[in-house]
Image (cartoon, rainbow, N blue to C red):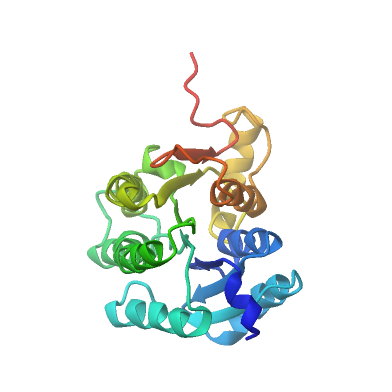
Length: 262
């Protein structure tokens, strides 16, 4: 890697081989930020994201890691240190849906454990590791700005009784954001939550017909599907430092779904 590349900010985006994570990585790359692409699959699964980011003139590298696994998380951060020597932005995006949508009275322990391990536990302990490194960097480079963005979901408050484990995992992300925001404010490290609504991705394809109907019925004030790029642009707005006196805030990317109406 070229020496001047170390002068650029570096962002780790978990689950960035496709969907929302890929769009976030791409939008950050457009801002001249080096990208640590992460996923559980082989290098082949990351080729498209890497190519898209590199076309923006930044360094992008794939780090295969399962964030639900302790050793894998630790190795991920270790390899980023060796490759980029810095991390300025962490985007906790990696997430999975239930193995099978089941009513809350039929939810299996296997599905619950899997969703919580990846969506919440993995994000929590990865943030813990990265936050400690950010503190070290902040003490050495006090002028650098560090940001953590957690991607949650409207499911953190909107009840879906046929996927309770997913809702619980996202509600946990919302509380995690507040906890880390308070702790890291001492070092001026900002922590935010981006809360997407119905975004057109592989995860929502199985229920597309349902949400198409809801769109027609007007449940979303902005009458269209959200796109991964919508989420990516919201992340960029947060990491560019335009909110210097804000932390722990929620940015809704949901077409206005969160607004209560009578």
